[in-house]
Amino acid sequence: MTNNQTKNKVELPKVGSSDQYNHLMKIIQNRVTVRKFDENYIVPDMHFEMIIEAARHAPSGANSQPWHFIVVKKPEIKHEISEYFVKEQRIRAKLKMKFPTPNYKGLAGAPGFIVICSDMRWTKAFPVLKNDNSELNKMYKENAERILLQSLAASTMSAHLAAASLGYNVWWVTAIGQEQAQKDLKPLLGIPEELSVLDILLFGPPFQEPYKRWRKPLKSIMNIDKFNEDNFQTDDEIDKWIQNSRHKVMFKDASNID
Ligand SMILES: Cc1cc2nc3c(=O)[nH]c(=O)nc-3n(C[C@H](O)[C@H](O)[C@H](O)COP(=O)(O)O)c2cc1C
Image 1 (cartoon, rainbow, N blue to C red):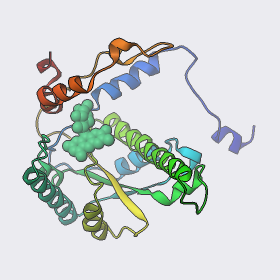
Image 2: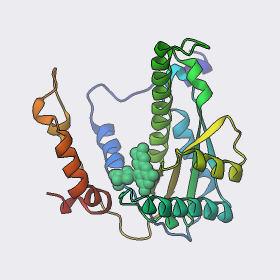
Image 3: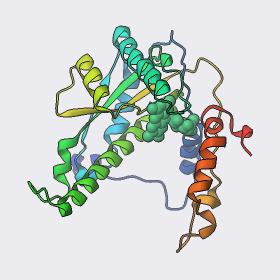
Image 4: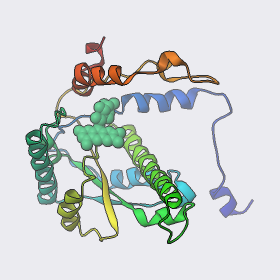
């Protein structure tokens, strides 16, 4: 085998062995969101590289890898981004959106701060009818956007798990889809017009003891061969859940949920 072949060889654990699975599950289960970090901690440069290296290996539609990562180190930029979110939060409160918004001031003090950008031009890499404005192509375009966003999520998740594997708590911030957010945030980081800010990954040691949030039981999401109708939730049930449980599952320990 040549050196190149050795380098590109895929090595997985023995089929069916669960040692690595258990190890991975520990990281997955303990990847827990906090929204305030130890502000005095300094992330070693190597950790940024290790985390983005994990993101780089994520799968993507057509292997297009439509992502860019910007490590933010300057406190003044972190502060400005944080201020944007605090402002946005006030706008939402005025609009009576009734979303239990967290305190975005915590962004400014996050030791690990990575802005994740998508390049939507890569939708062209997926099956679309080029230069066609038909209804049919609208459907393909929407599908292409879904593929692209899922690719970004796969990459972002790899980065989050890598951060958790290094012992950090994480915070996934996506509340930035609006056009105004793009206009306000892109110039701060010199992001070209063609790219969009999609997510922000914050990480670091927690300021307070983190807690594990509630998850739906396995049987309520796992179906075999056919969708189990017991798992179907009506619109009314979903509305009630949003009204009565959402704030608890977002901001409380799993033991607080019935
Ligand atoms: C796609 C995505 C977007 C999210 N956006 C935000 C966000 O904008 N602001 C925020 O505070 N948390 C955000 N979160 C974090 C979720 O609220 C959090 O993951 C969820 O409550 C479960 O908690 P856990 O991460 O501790 O398991 C986001 C998570 C995901 C996966």
